Length: 170
Image (cartoon, rainbow, N blue to C red; front, side):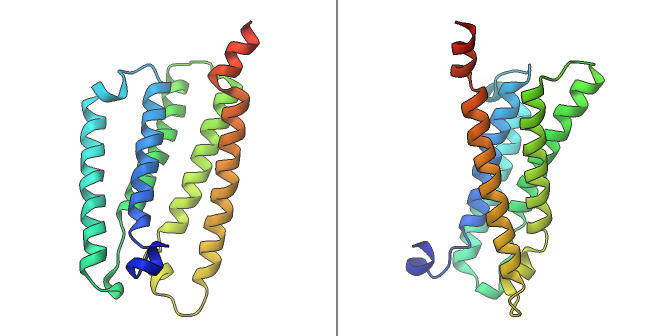
């Protein structure tokens, strides 16, 4: 719909990256034993910088030509999520904390998904400007990987969510 009415849907790439960063960084901060996410000043600075970058790129998409499209915000935000995942494992290993099996699978899935997305989005200029048709394989892989990950996430939440834990305790 956005592509048909606005001429392109490229503005969804940085917006999607920002929304994922927001959701998963809140998840990482809330699942660890740190301050609540809204009291963490480093998180607030990170989100503000990423929001500014996202707004800048969305404005740039609508004010410049299609040939000048470059989206580094998606790559940067995906890299932050990968770093959050790695930090979770390193922190727990260094503190010698036991990682619950379900949490291990969840964080491993997040790390694997965002690492693959990072590799797919690194050549974003190529994916946008390629005329050979090779870009469609990248976009297809992105869609398949995303569907698998979000299915995994839904199943993981349904089987290991707080309501399930409460039901098992009763």
